[in-house]
Image (cartoon, rainbow, N blue to C red; front, side, top):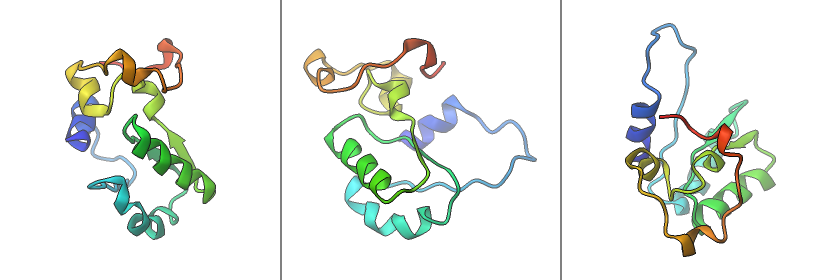
Length: 109
């Protein structure tokens, strides 16, 4: 659902865009299988969940020195991109362990 939510937020308007690839994980446990594919890229935008699994997956990518950009900071008050799109914020007790973000740099609806 997060991948579909991404395309709802950022529809493909131009047909002459550079080729992009996407990896959709059915859980962070599948990250190992994606690493060979990801390592071939010059830039990786990680739209991971704002939970322990998402943070661990991000740290793993960073430890491998892959060119990863953590996009989850933009929707830090939400569990994932889909919850952001739906406006479903995390409970206050879930947000306590998450880093604070600059609200001006968040995703726009």
